[in-house]
Each structure stands twice: as structure tokens, then as C-alpha cells.
Image (cartoon, rainbow over all chains, first blue to last red; front, side, top):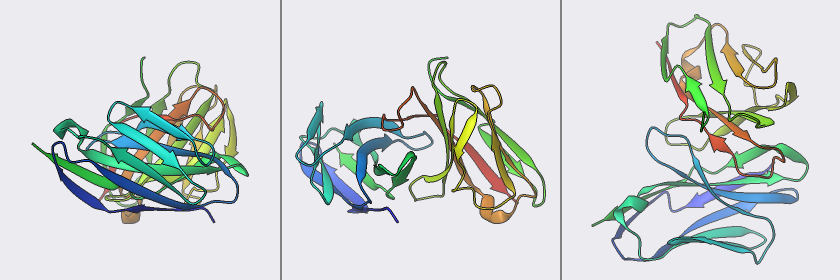
Length: 111
Length: 114
């Protein structure tokens, strides 16, 4: 069974204080790993897809990296508007229609 | 429209009542997904459509849950004889094709069963 574990559950940072969120996964053949951002009362918003170990993707202050067992979401010099819950999800190549999500990391950035 | 639209936004149902939740995906999106999200947890897969074909319904918790997408666009998730444990946010998502692309989610329907 595919599993995704995210850590920490919650992270509080000062504005400008860089850090990383972790996503550990087990999957029977990785089709893709996804990062989403979710604001309160909203649906998740797609950020990145990573397909193979060693791949990296960047968007503004966010950079996602992938190894064979985990992914990191690095946040450089965060701003208060980066405060949200960040969700990681995997798709197995044996079941293309289903994503398995972690429970997320709730990030709070204080000014 | 520009995004995935879900209605109603909020639904309060008495235990035992039937409910229907609607999803309007992005026009032209082939794939449509339903997820259930409990408070403080990540979304959990319910079911997946490609056009009008329901390709995977393995996540539906019981036979009280039923989803359809008869014309390959709008989808309805129906829950019969609601129970308190059905209280959650129900999220709909769509994608243009290949399931490995990221999804566009709607804002969800918050169902509360009292």
C-alpha cells in the first residue's frame, strides 16, 4: 500500500528564515510526486510534479527536490503570504488515477 | 468557467438523509476525481472518471456512496442515508488528460451530518 508521511506537522518561521519540509514515501513504482499548497477553506493548489530521483523544480521562493525515498520542499526567505498547508502526494504507475496524500505541513510565517 | 466549481459550498444533513454534491470541472478536462478530506488530514481518494467512464471506485467507503458523470462533464457524488462519519469536505478535481499531471481542485463542499 502506498504511504506518504510529512514532517513536521507544523512549522513556524520568521519572515526571511529559510527552511525545508519533508515528504517520505513508499510506493510500488513511482509515476509522479506532487506538491500542493492549501489555504484555509480552499482546495489544494498544484505547485510541482517530480518524476524521477535527482529532479528539481523551482517557483519563486519554493524549490522541490526528489530522491528515491523522499522529497523536500525548500522555502527560501519566506514571506507571510507563504503561510499555508503544504501537501505532498504520490501516484503509483500501477494506478494512474489515484493520488495518495500525506497529512500536510502547516507553515506559519511571522512578519 | 476558469476553475472547478462545486456546489453547494456547505451542506447540513440530518442523519439518514440523502445528499447530492455537484462538480463542474474545467471545460475540456478529460479526467475528474473525487476526494474526501477530514479536518486536519490530507485528501483521501474516492473515485476517478475518464470522460464518462468510472475507471476506479475503490475509495468509496461503502455502497451508500455513488458517483456519476453521464455526459463526461458535470459529475455528481451522491451519499445515501448519511451517517455522522460522512461529515467531511468533499473535493472535486479535474485534469486535462494523463493522470500524472497535477490536478485543479475546486473549493470543496463541507458536509456536516447532524
